[in-house]
Length: 306
Image (cartoon, rainbow, N blue to C red):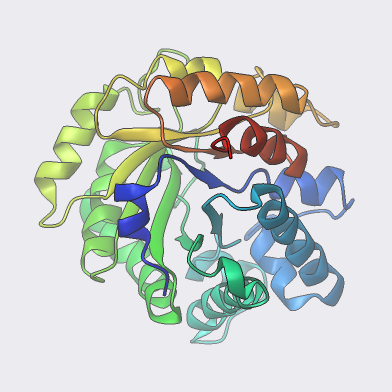
């Protein structure tokens, strides 16, 4: 396993992958499984090839810079897998382990880069990422998410990552379950236009509450699925290390309603994130609407001069 904690302490910048599901839909033309999204493609020959190609493109885009690739398991929880037809008792273990194995194989194919490619075991919120009322309380969240978290940890992810969390209470439950694995972990929030969490909590107060509620707090926090301009207003908090930014200024609700991709040019995206890096953000990458061109443009701006 790569030493992600050391990289966070030492690397001036760590890139992340970019959009996954938007590329599946608009680039590959594959309709996403409603219950479990990209995870359903792991069992499909064409879908798996598409997934491998998308992640490989991000590794190529990063070139010699450190990069995180997250498993396509945002919706690979037991109830969602069952709704998608994976009803076997060990479905959570099998699907999440398969996703980690795919990423480990992609890393192994680049032996000279093994110490700068980091695998994030990804879980998503129980409900809709932008509807706080669907989020469970802390106790229920810990119980609900624990099986998937345990599966990702046992499969060999370098760290655990929970993006687009809508509510403080669910984040506390996720943090407790992740801390119990002994792995480093990272939490990330989607934000309302006000800059608060979707449940109305102030971002800084939520971070303090989560840190206080866990014996081993998150390694750091991110914001994601928002435009870089919105992220800029949140980056004053010392525990907030960066952003996985959308390529569009539209809100997530507006993006979901579109039947086409909306994204700024890679050069515009990269310049905005370089400005965030100049303000102290160290973990930077893409979310909805971004692709390998956006990450390559960002890498080009952030690569130290030789």
